[in-house]
Image 1 (cartoon, rainbow over the protein chains, first blue to last red):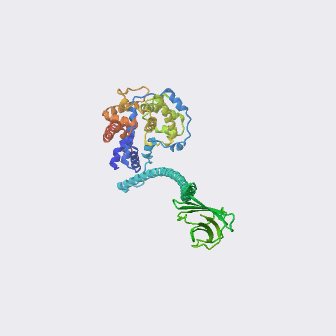
Image 2: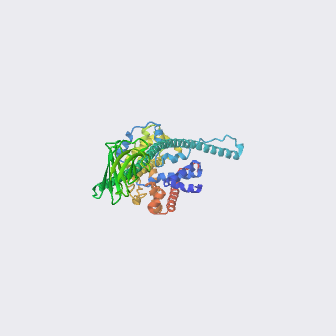
Image 3: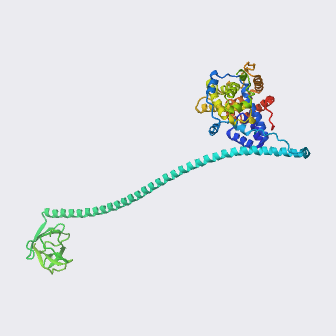
Length: 338
Length: 201
């Protein structure tokens, strides 16, 4: 605000009609020592304070005086503590403290008249500035005290904000640790899940495999039973030779499909590198199949394509090297007539 | 006692305040006698409640006891100091009322700045100086145009800022500011003879 604007606002300040910020601007201006504004303010303040004289007097209750007079006399100096409490409205001393410094004792001219008017004016001027600077110094001191108090308050506030901030940081750190833990846990769970999935895949594969071997077994048994039930089927029993007297076998044959089924029992366990080989004999032996034994020393062998069954006179089983041979070379274990 | 109560509020001797500051109960009693009617009138005018006005005066005089040492004779007349203190505290109450949702003031111009027929007759218990000042002030106020009286009333007795007043009257801010300035300037001119002659002016 310019000086003119401030001077314009003085009457409004005096009657208490300014907003806080405007009030502060004027007070700062008065503190800067503007004599014209001081003089104007003094008049306007007096005018404002005389306004209640325009009212029709109202007499206070009779009891009021007694109540007030009975109040304990406060200890002089207790004013200081009272001063600390901030008030929302203008303190009575507030503006008055800004105005009219104590009347300085009349300054007698320390110079002779011979010094002339100019010198007197100079001294007066100096005195005025001394007075002004005295006032300003006093005012500055109180201003500084106020500022110091404000700074202390702000420092305390900053400290409290800082501690709050630290608390927040701690909370955030805790949350972050918690989150990291959760992330680790989630990663673990994901690993476990992947493992389970892999296991499941394995199990699935296994199951499919088991399923297919079961199906194969079921199919074979069905065919075996089918062969047995079929009245057209032919059965050739084989008996054990001198080498395996308790052993025996059946050969089932279905002429319609030319499929055969060999069931052998009580054959001796094979030495390693050897297999049993089944031969069909017309005029000379023809290899039909090679087979091993299961855990119960039994053998089941399904033969898909056994042509010219009816022409065969005999069937025999010998022990041959792994994979079998085109002609029998080993010892005879089973023999049967068609 | 009789002599004390006849002393004017407008002419309280600064020396009396100096005696009060030293803890002189008689001086305090005299201060009360000289100022209480004016201060009660003011606080009743602002609060519009006799009981609350009396309660406020109790607080004000207690504060006077406590703060009087801070009072500086050179910085304003005793009655100006007392009036300013009383007005501030009454406005504080008005605002705390408003903050508690009660109606702060009987609205606008129900209680004018002066009574419609101002009581300017001499009062036997009133000092001559006060009677004269009352008559002077009443005339000065009644000489103002009504909108200016209203603006002064709202600022001084209702504690409203120019922004509040402009909003309440639905008038431009500049108009309200001008009304207050003009009113204050005219009052200053009307009261010129009673204003202390400042040494700096």
